[in-house]
Image (tube, each protein chain N blue to C red):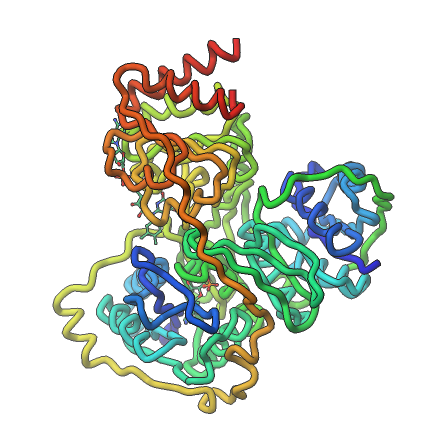
Length: 264
Length: 320
Ligand SMILES: Cc1cc2nc3c(=O)[nH]c(=O)nc-3n(C[C@H](O)[C@H](O)[C@H](O)COP(=O)(O)OP(=O)(O)OC[C@H]3O[C@@H](n4cnc5c(N)ncnc54)[C@H](O)[C@@H]3O)c2cc1C
Ligand SMILES: Nc1ncnc2c1ncn2[C@@H]1O[C@H](COP(=O)(O)O)[C@@H](O)[C@H]1O
């Protein structure tokens, strides 16, 4: 029996571009270039490593899953070119404006539709950045949450990993099936090879909509959201500060400034 | 008046500052009822009471330490059932957000994470969030169920507001999922004696420009002269010069001190995401084109190996 791994990846607006809100106060995804969230590349990488360590070639099957607009296919392609085997894209007009609780419902249904032993997520999406979906997904699926790992491995039906928290570093252990999330400390993600990019073009991408997953339109989207953004204001640019060139007294000048601000 | 649950972040009864800030914010919405899990409730109750907690619900069980997150969700849910609060506030730590999320799902209430301010509104609490690397500020509220809101450190100044702080035992039944993820071992972090990065009033951070672990004592010396915490950019952390726990930015800590000093840091968007809301920003960088200078109140274009030691000496002299 092969290990069925589902990696949840998100398509996000490029953080180095100018990110804005649309008129309905959802994240503007039309006017900005998008890409596979860098933090989810780490999740794909760990899935590939777990598959590499498994005994035989078909010992693990990696499905990448995204919930997002048409363009989100780019994120799936990238993950496939890194080496994932197949992809699932949940896309539906009614998903526009879905909040984290709603997204977790869609992901949970889709993960169950695919079938899984292990779900791997990134630590947070680089746009919303709530870092809550792995926990929500585990709660919905009723399986252990093994989150924020900087190291992860699977042995038989046990997943172990290290979680570096504020107060302590913890060694965790759970039985599969489980939901895991990995941090950017878990190891550099590989670049897709030319061969990988070519192979990805032939890999299957399954498209699903809400009715395929048995989800009603009013459970998701802006109307189904349990939170509402009332306003979004662009932060005024910081007023230009004083900039001096160090000509031997830079440290003292800085001290003078700090004293003037009562920091010393 | 409606009650507001406040989840207490503490180490064996020593309450961490963000919790006291939450109590201050909670009083704008209703009467704070603190939820303290683990040892040290009596000690914690004194401080919690001084800051406005009318009640401290407490439970202690081995499960809280031996298993990840879920036992705490079970306990917070028990407190929720006992109190039927108007809102639940949780500190925005990694664990706090996970606890809050699972609770929100269970009780059917909307979830807002990483609020930087909170006020009472006609239709429930209104949370301010800082998004897109702090380039936008949004106001949101929960439209369904009881609001569950996580609040970032340094979002309010803790105010003294004496209240009873009566300790009451909370009875908790752990569900099947509670023992799903076992904590096999735990290695506590060594204390540096410096203030906690996310709570510090002053943070001094070093980046790639520091050029080696052996030079980080320069940054530490400046931090110590000012009584501040030490931060680092991801480039410095990835190079192995400073621990990841000290990383400031999108995938590290988000800080909002009174004073942030960046030395040898270029100011990439992911770094800004974690420090842009600092009140006063100072940078030392030898490249006058470095994007960090767009943010600063005061910047010195120069070699940090000259400027930082001179600054440290000057601070020490002035402080006598
Ligand atoms: C998904 C993702 C998440 C990320 N998360 C984070 C994060 O949480 N935190 C973070 O910091 N970064 C993060 N990054 C990385 C970020 O993009 C930058 O690469 C990083 O912040 C650069 O660190 P730096 O400024 O120290 O290094 P550099 O960009 O190399 O800048 C070094 C600076 O030091 C100056 N310098 C050199 N020598 C001296 C000297 N002697 N005196 C004075 N100045 C000198 C140089 O002029 C330069 O401006 C993330 C990136 C990604 C893709
Ligand atoms: N729309 C989505 N589609 C697929 N996976 C997602 C989506 N949103 C979030 N995730 C996963 O959940 C993780 C945490 O996201 P978040 O809670 O939004 O910060 C991400 O790193 C992804 O692995």
